Length: 396
Ligand code: SF4
Image (cartoon, rainbow, N blue to C red; front, side, top):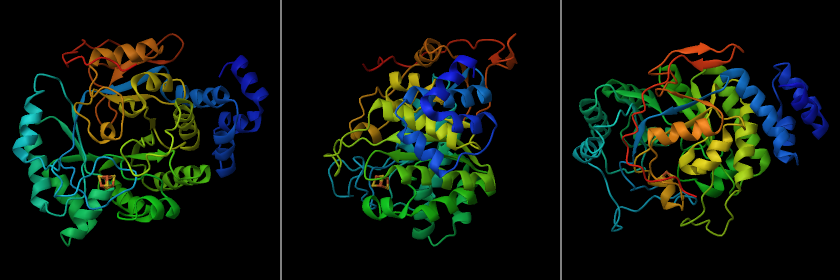
């Protein structure tokens, strides 16, 4: 942080927190709440940006990926969800392994490195359905990384099939599972669980499954869905719970704050969190989660433009190209369902950052990381632009 920025942050009233951040000290619950309530968002952002640049220099990551939601049939009935259907509803669906193959083949000309797959809790599906789908994906694209099934889905598999969580995870891993997405965490408190999603696991189980996966060699992400019934205290408690789990396993890759999209849900009367609040949660996440390597500005939820701004509020990752995302679009997300590799690179460069393509585990691909004369991490060589994805445009 340059002296001008430091003075600005100190004058905003964040001097004590800034001193702790600059000393590398861990922030506590009260610090987190102060950051959530502080009137000067830019000062909070400047502090988070300092941490982000100390870790990642000027680099911002992206991945070329494809999202597939294998079923929207779900028995959990979360109040905030616009995606799920009961098995009898006319637009309920289950993708067969052949359907998944077809979807992958539609984009086989694109250099997709990751398949992200999540879906509903559908008790009609046998365990072999999940392993067959993973094997299909690895057959169609042997080099693709399969990041699939939330902690909630894994818990349901264990319960429905009379297996332990370890048996489920090892079975999926043996079929080719590479890592686990961060969904299903919502807000990791009893209050939010009781009010919003008591049909699925609580925070104790979510954390326990995540830590079990990490111990078995499966990395994961962690989300936080905010802006519904939770308090600011619950957001900070959520982050502290994740931080404590990470102290134990170091298995989380990225923290992904997700603003609640109320449209078409049973909470449609609630206002949607503002862009300023989304940026603040990126920044608070970056400052509180000192043991998380990455903070993701998930453009599919935030819109590309807000996510782009997030690269200066603590985020170092925009996620990926994303083909046919359904969960947030059912809840009124106005983002496109796909951006091309070229667009992601442009978004990052327009933000003044250096784009680096990564794999799911955040290994840079297509290039080596070097240092510029100022000692900042930069790519040694730019990758060829493979922007062959259909350009659906960036939403306003
Ligand atoms: S959020 Fe997930 S678990 Fe909850 S109802 Fe929707 S699909 Fe089901």
